Amino acid sequence: MVSWTGHVLPVAVTILTWFFATGLVAWLDNRERRTFPRSLLLAAVAALGGIVMVAASMNRATLGGAYLSLGGAILIWAWHEISFLTGIVTGPRREPCPADARGLARFYYAVAAMAWHEIALALSALGLIWMSREAPNQVGAMAFTLLLVMRLSTKLAIFLGVPNLSTDILPPQLAYLKSYFGPPRLGPELCLAIAGCLALAAWLGSLALAAPAGSAAAAGASLLFALATLGALEHLFLALPFRDGQLWGWALPTRRAPSGAN
Image (cartoon, rainbow, N blue to C red; front, side):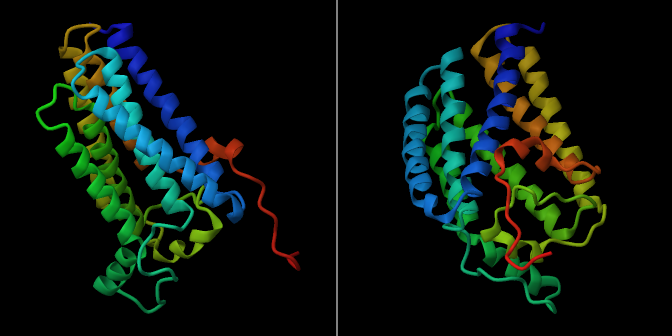
């Protein structure tokens, strides 16, 4: 049985949080470089607050605990996104992919372009999993890990090539990453990724519906269901002729053309 507190509200909260958090990160990372130190400092403070939120909620198997744990995970994730999109934590390689790179060499260059960011995300996921091990509320750790898996899937699909790719949110300081994008194509890997996300969302949805209506278990599974569904949507954006950057046009500053441009 679908309930407001156990199913509808958690999904709505997750979607709104995803929408506005993504817009805020896009706005911060597309501002002038002189604003980056302050943005990184505020994001770091928020991430520390996120760790405290996850720690404080992991022993609270309640509705409030589920929301608090998810909020903490989102704050930690946002810090990683801001540090990456400002160009502070990317990888040892900070230049375009060589034009003649093919196969494993191209994959190596792509990994080197963002290795530190991926390692930081993985360490954070492991830290959250370890911190909340055997705790009754593991929503934060599971949410962060789910975001990491879906992000890796998206990046791999983009590297191999997707038919529709919007770079509206990608800030100027990371423009060189476009050289690592694959050709416009609909490959089996993207179809499998979409199917995998949808299957995961369906499984999480079934767990939410099977839990007692209005319970913390239902809310936690619903929060994760919403994240998995959003992950499937982001993968679909890569296949369909829709610019996902339009969703956050309100958060992106108007970029001036270089001097001398026509």
